[in-house]
Every structure is written in structure tokens, then in C-alpha cells.
Image (tube, rainbow over all chains, first blue to last red):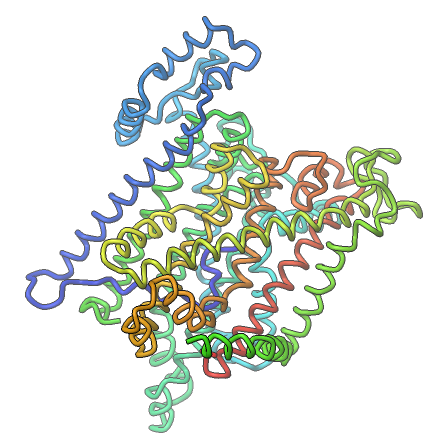
Length: 348
Length: 291
């Protein structure tokens, strides 16, 4: 799946409407409003997740128990999972628990009477693993995007630009599983350099096995960098066309100074949003990349939960991912407003 | 009124010819269009040329290329070439259907929000905001959890992911167009709202709305292929490019072509769509946007 930020025509960055004159602390009011909208959105999202996972009339216990779904077993599991309540009361319990970090009990684990069925504890390890994968990718992705994008923008139309932009267009659009499969073929089948899967034994830290992380990180980088590079390039090329850059050059300011002092600073201001888009992309992109490499993160957890139709696990993983997504969105909006004073007056 | 509609109709073919010429005016566009034609031809005509049945085993599972099966056999011993040739129709049809639905819903919501305003606008746009605050694949997976992985579900889910972007663009364009004098004249004449929307507004917002058609189409294909890859969409023994890549993972060492062939043609299709869409955008930017 392409990065969500892969829009060639960038949708105009939402200029946060800040109550301009009159209000005492427009910035504080904006922050408060953005946070409140974020929480409200999350609330609506939680309802949608709950609806999606409870819309089918079929009983979770029946589905999960499969052939062992005798009436007695179903009733027992229903009671253990608190399924014998109305949908509204189940939603309120679920949301109340989720706010306190209790995501309920896995239906499958309960059905198999596994000792540890609390999702909050079984999900924490995958979440950490995913975080490691996302963090390493981000650390490499951000400078890669900014540097390659700026170079392409500075040399817009020249061979160097084409050498960067064309691969960015081609690779940035590919589905993760295609990119991952190609990389596995090259680095495992052909070169026998890297393992095709990133399996970890339970409790093992991904950092103790860095070799396994190379291909997942490469896949994410290849797919995610493309969109960002193209956006940074467009911003850089546009800034270099601006009057103040022309006047700086006409005034005899050295080319290097024009680039560093005039162009780069202004071109990189929107990068906060590009970085945020990258992070948001990772929240979704990680789902499929983890599955390609069997990496035990939250994405694999979610896909396994959907496969085994354990809606309680699906709910838990979905709300965690959606929360991350919304938090990144809100933070990006706040950081942009702090960095670009122009936006604070509500002017586009 | 009717005269205006007629002029637009008579201009349509010429406009289409110009569109093709503008897209093929640089190398990126030319490569894109030719690749796209090639993949579409393979997808449509491929099943006619498939040397074997896409569903019947013809030899040892995972066997490498032979003269009878130039791409070798898959994990169940079926001919990879025949399956690759047969897998394109569903990919294109599902992606096309999802794109169509995306634009139908996006246009309706955007036109309504932009033109009718009042309470409908904030209500619809907040809904759109909520849909935008999900990772795309998560929406797909939740949809599959709720309704299973049928064709209709995949199309509906992809449209649900993609329509908010279209709705936003349509709304903005509608807001702008609806203040023009020809719209006010139509309203003053007492035209019905649907007539104003269809005859006055719709023809004048087409350009910005279709600008990123290519991106939405490639996203539709990618989202649906990804769900199929995860094994949560179309069920075996369907010959689907996404599904083929995942079901042959085990035999990557014995017959890598079983994964690489479907992956490569899927990649070609998406690259072609992106190159074409990109060339159109570049051309549109050069000619000063709008019509």
C-alpha cells in the first residue's frame, strides 16, 4: 500500500483556524481545541471500531470455540468474556477498560484456557517490537527524505534530479508485499545474505538479532521514502522560484548562502508535516511489512487476530493503532503551529 | 441551458483526444501509457492465451521452468504462467469498481456539502475527517472482520478508505464554482437543485476532481491486493496476483518465479498507472491548471 502521503497534488495543509484578535492566548486556545478535537475523534473512532467488530450477529464464543461450541461451553466463555451483556454496556466496559490500559481478554486464549489471556500483557511485547522497527525506520527515513528531496529540488530538471525522482516515483508506489518479496528474492534467494523472515523467539529483543531487521526496514524505507522525497523536492523547487531567492542572488549573495539561509529554511518548514505523514504511514505500513517477514509486532498480531476471528484482540490492536495515528496527527499540527508563526494568526 | 449542455457534449471527444496527447507528450507519460496498455491487454486477453488451466495441477509442486511451463509450477503444481495470465481481470475489475464507487460517493458527499451547506456541510465534513483518522489498511481489516472477505466487501472497504479525499476536493471546488454568476442565474431561473448540480456545477469541477484519478486507482489496486496477500480477501483457488505472492512463499527457493511473476506484473501495473497520472499532472500544471 502506498504511503498515504503519496498525494501528488498536496491537499492544502489545513490552516488551523485560530481565534485571531480578541482572545488572550490564541496559541493556548488552539492547542486546547486541537487536543479536544483529537480526543473527540478518538471517541468516534472507538465507536466505529466497536461497531465493526460487533456488527455480525454471530457470537464470538461460538466462532472461537469452533467444534467445541457446546451450549455449556459457549455459556461459560460468554460469562468469562463478559459477552452476556447488551452491546452498549459491553462498549462502555471496553472503553472504560481501554482508558485504564485494560484491553480485555483474548477470546481464543480463554477458549483454549491458556494461562495468560489478558491482552494488555500479551500485546505489550509485539507493541515494543513494532516500536523498535518503526523507530529504526524513522531514524533513517527522515534524513534520507530531506537530503534526497532537497538535492532533487535544487537540481530540478537536471540528471541528478531524474536519478532521484524516477526511482522515488517507481518504488514509492509499490505495495509493501511486492517490495518485500523482491528484497527477499535478492538478498536471500540470490545472495544468501539475509534471512527471509524476522522471527524472534518469545521474549527475545529484536535488537539482539539486528540481521533480521534489515529487510523489513529496507522495505519500509523503499516504499515510504518515495512519497516524502517527491514532496520535499516540490517544496524546494518552488522556494527556489520565489522572489526573495532571486533578489538574494541579484544582491550578490553567494549561492551556498542562498541555499542554506534562504531556500532550505523555508523549504523545510512543511517537512514537519511530511515527517508526520511518514510516521502515520508507518502505523499502517508496518501491518503488512510485519506479515511479510513474520515479524512478531502489532501488525502480525492484528492480522492473526482477524484470521482467527478473535474480535476482542482485533478491537484492542485497532484501538492502539488508531490512537497512535491520531496522536501523531495532533502532535504534527501543534508542532507546525509552533514552528511556523505565520499560521498562528490563521492566515494560510 | 440545453445549449450549454450540448456544447459540452460536443467538446468531450476532442477533450479526450487532447488529454491523451498531453499525457504522451513526455517520456514518463509515454512509458506509462504503453505499459498500462500492455498490462491491461494481458489482463483482458491473457486467459485466452493461457496454455493450461489456472486451477488444475499439471506436475510436481514447486517445479522450476520447463518447456511446457515456462514460469514453472506453483505450490500445488499448477502452471504459474496460466495463473498469472488469469489473475489480471479480477485485479483490474475490483480496482476499477472501487475507484468508480470512490468517485460516486466522493462526488455525492462533496457536492452536497459544498452546495447545500447549512448543517449538511459540517456534518459531512466531520464524518470525512473521522474516516481520514484511520490507517487505510486498518479500515480494510476492520471491514473484513465485520463482513468477511468477499469481492463486494473489498470494493466497499477500498472506496470507504478513498472517498474522503475526493469529497474534500469536490467540496472545495463546488464552494468556489457555486458563487459564479452562471450558477446564480440558474438558481434565479428556478432550476431544481439537482439540475443546478448536474448541469452547472459538475461540468465545471471535473478538472481538479479527476486530477488524481490515477493515484486513487493505484491505491484501490494496492489496498485490495494487500488484503488478498494477507489471505483475508479472495479465497483460494482464485488466481489473484496478491494471493499468488503469499501462497507461494514456501517455494521461493525452488521456483522463485511463482512469486516474482505475479509480483512483477502487479508492480508494472502500478508503476504504469502512477507514471500516467504523474504525466497528466505535470502537463496540467504546465498548461496553467483548470481546463
